Image (tube, rainbow, N blue to C red; front, top):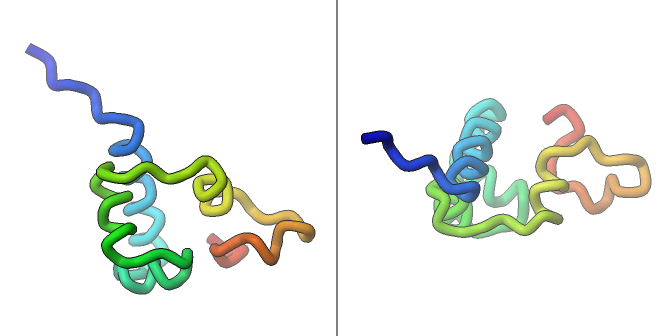
Length: 77
């Protein structure tokens, strides 16, 4: 029998955790960086809470000059 595939939320959570770890942040640091509670970040990482498309875009794209004030991540991420 094959194992079930992880849900999309679990897959995104795994990527989010890798991003946070690459930045060297603890969950509380990352939560502050993106304007969320630590418990919310933990739920994102476990796939227990969905990120909105807008939040995913802000986390994973380099901001254009007009979006720079909206981005929660440093431009080096």
